Image 1 (spheres, rainbow, N blue to C red):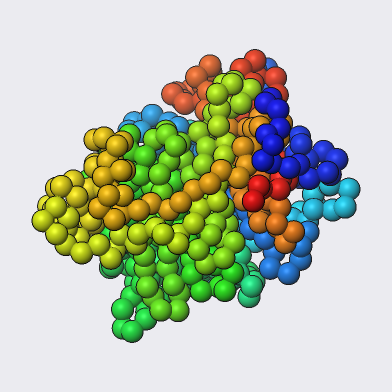
Image 2: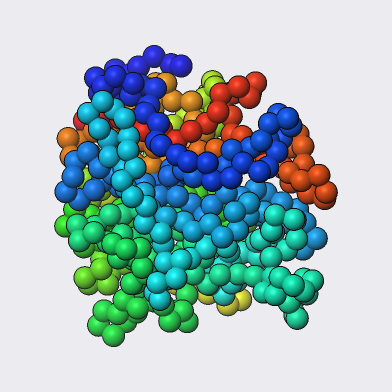
Length: 468
């Protein structure tokens, strides 16, 4: 590991350089560990690494979020998709307490439920509400269908989807005990009460009756171009300003706007939604590298935030891996919804029934940057300024951090930052052996940190003090 950088301090609590593990139970151990075929795979009832948020009153407690559940890439009879290893898994929020001896105790779990109080699933949404034709497969490698007793048929027995299904990634805990969660499907922003029951929703789909926040007779929606999220890279980060008025969300990577040809773009969109006025604003964030992702955000005030940017590489496998935390400042950034139409700039453009948003020189913003990275300077010269970013923690330089995913960001009352990695329920895809002995073209193994596959991943809490 790299030496500690001068700009980052380490909290003097024993064990936090290596992190403190979150508790877990075994969710399932019936599958073969493809890395070691004589051993069973432990799918762990943990996975609380998608995001984190401070408890509103208790300084030693934090909330942590799971994603849609244990799954693996799968190529089956209906096409590419995901095999859901625990098909009835319900995403949830965990409440944890950091004790004086650095141990972490789970206080409770809050299952996420629809507006009628029924537990939701992690299955993909219908295409009209955020689905990207991702095929869900069951444990036997068969497509999950509306009627599981009948063979798959696109018309008679279509693929099973869940309009309330969620792939949770961003978490904001409110002072009243409720939660806002962002996801990677729609993307959707869903407001849950303290018991995990849906009470409000915001997404880009104007015909979705669940969008129930109305201000001045206008339904609050995400911009329609946000529905062009890159599959499995939706709204990864979410927070709320300290005055509890404004949600701030960040897409994980560049939108597929107008299509997936722009995935080499370093442009990421941030959105703010004032829940009182209904005002929606958009800002631009520049990744250090188009292959990086953003994965967590926490509000310092109404215009300054901490944000995670990283490369999803394992530091024990790649000495050039990067895990950074920046402070971003919206003060001088441009709300791109305010850009007035000019000869080379047009707002709210729709082509072939596809919403493109703001275009410059007949290109979407994502196209404009993907075409030439120097176009960031061109945007700046035209008065379109991205948010200012300042490095405050080089995580690998500060900690013995061995994980690929850095996703949870807990802003503590003392100003320090709690960091959580996502261990993916301690499992991952593998190409060494089939999951089943029958027909599976996919495989899974325990998730390991090193190339030799000797060190198992687990969700851990790290604490650092960011530089000023």
